Every structure is written in C-alpha cells, then in structure tokens.
Image (cartoon, rainbow, N blue to C red):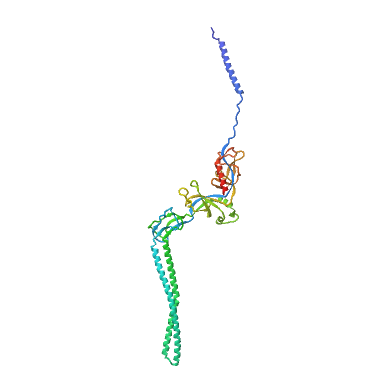
Length: 459
C-alpha cells in the first residue's frame, strides 16, 4: 500500500517543476539572443515607363498654317436700274441655285422704255430729214445766187450802155433811172441770197446738235430697255433673293445677290512670327532691302493647300497664293495671306465631297519654294519651347528646342535635337529631371514620322 507523500517531499517536487520551467525559459532566451538576423534585401530605384520615338531627319519645305473662311472672288448684286413691275422670274432664282452665265433671271416690264425708244427714233428721223432739207436748200440757194450774180452783172453793163446813150441823147433820163432801179433790185436779191446762204451752216449746226441730243436720248432709252432684262454675268450660285413676280421694283433696289463659282478665296490669318520664318527661308524675299508687302508677295514663290478638317477624312483643294492682306490685325498680331482655289465646284460629289462654298472655315497650309533639312518629332512631344529626351543612362532630361514650323501632328525642329535621339511622347508624371525611365517605343507615332519623311522626300 502506498503511503501519501510527506510535506517535505511535496515541496521538493514543486521546486523541481519550477526549475525545469525556468531552465526551458532560459534556453529559449539564450537561443533568441544568440540567433543571427535574417539577411535584408536592399530596395532598388523605381523606374517610370514612358513612350518614346526616335528623332528622324528629312528635307522639308518651310510651311505655315493659317485659318480663315472661304468666300467667292466675285460677288454680283442684281440691282434694278429702271423702275417697273417684275413680269418674269426664272425658276432657278432661289437661294443656293446654280445658274450658268447669260441666264435671264428677271425681266422688268419693258413697255415704258420701248415707248421712249419709239419716240426718240421718230424725233431723230425728223431731225435728220430737216438736215437733209437744209442741205438741198443750200444747194438751191447757191445756184440761185449764181444766177442772180450773173443777172446783176448784165444789168450793170446795160446801165453803163444806157448812160453812154444818154450822153449822146439817144435815150431819155427816165430809161436810165429805170435801169438803175433794175440794178439795185438785182443787188438786193444777191444780198438776200448771200445772207441766206451764210445762215445755212449755223442752222445746220443747230440741227446737228439737236440730232446728237436726240441720238443720246435714244441711246439712253435703248439702254433702259436693255436694263429691263437682268441676266447672270457669269456662272454663279444664288446667295440672296429679294423679289417676287409682279412686284414693283424701284431704281437702285437690290433684287438678288450671287457668288461667282469659278474662283474661291480664303484669307488665312498667320501669326507674324510664323510668317517671318517663311519669308526668311525664301531666298527671293530680299531681306536686306525694304519692300512693301505687295511687292514682297509677288516675289515669294509660295504654294498652298486649302484643307477642310470638319469632315473625316479631311478634304483638300490645291490653291495658289495671290496676295497679302493690306493690313495687320493689331490685336491678334496676324497677317492675312489670301489664296485662291480655281474651280471649287468642279470636283464636288454629292454626299462625298462638298464644294468650297462661302463660309466654310478652312485650314490653309502655305509652303515656301526651297527645302531645308529639319529634325522631325511629334507635335505632342513639344512642351512650350522644350522636349523631354532619354539620355544614354536612360534618365529623363529636358532639352530646349527651336521649332521652325508645325504641320499636322509633326513639328520641324531647327536646333536642339540630333537624328537618332530618343524623345518622350507621353506625359511623365512626375517629370523629375534625372529620374530613371523605362523607354517603350511607340510604333504608331514612329510610323507617322516615317510617313512624314516619305512625303517630304516625294516633294
């Protein structure tokens, strides 16, 4: 039979249990303190991923872009030049209608001008008859005067003979007096005919003056008669109509407005700084001599293209540079370059290609005649006057550049870049100078640069 432990044995067991626990804790602490730290992995520098392209070089003509509205080169206003009722109105005389040259658009009642023409023709005929009668009278009077002068000479010789007979006593003094009266009568008739003949030239001049007056009135009446017919002077597009059939038109009233369709003009506003670059790049500009704008314009061998960007894809028209606007916009600091598009309606296709009509807001690209080599980069890569590039250590650097001009999405760089450099085309956020980059080529934008090079080489 086991006996229960005594008190001293119970105490010994407890002390032994506490010792074992304390020894275990001590071993754990020693092991923990003497255990070496695990190796720490050092954290590397973060790199920012950016899209990049490679700078390319190509021969490009200096180009500037301007914007303006298209307008016709000529505008015709159909103004009533006579009073009268509208008796005829063409069916195509409607806003937007196209009419060929010579089309009779309106007719004003010609009755009154036709009556005046008939009256003046009768008056002219009467005056010409009077002139012809006067010419006949002049011939007759001259013949009568010649006869009377010969009769006068005979009467004088007879008077001299009778005076000789009177001295001999052969005739009486009464006979001599009678002959003297005959001579005086002949002198009076000669004088009358001479005076009449002298007056005929002045009478003829008066009739001729009246003839000219009547002839002028007849011409005026005929012109008024012609003015009753209003026809299109050239191929045109009707812009405004302000008249109806049977309406009374007054002299000076605008009846319709039409735009010529043979030539369209666009006045593109170009910043002066861009224009300066275009002129400086042109060897014919004569930078060392002072010339006025129009003389300068005649010496610049510029070509132009008008582009409508409000449709997809954009529509282009070949254009020719014609002149500079006469003044500079003082607020916008721009100069107007006027280009002309010939036959802007010829290539129009319904629903596909609209004509270059009045009011279309267009982009105008104007090129110089000489080529220069430029570095080409995307226009979106330019930030003010600088771009971001990736250096040889794949770090971000800001580079100052000089932009000659931009075309579409391409910027032509004069200085600041060399071919083959890597330009950042995405927006690095944050943009910290010297930060590490991961350069990812952008094939789409690089292909656009390649296409721009090919286009420049084709030119």
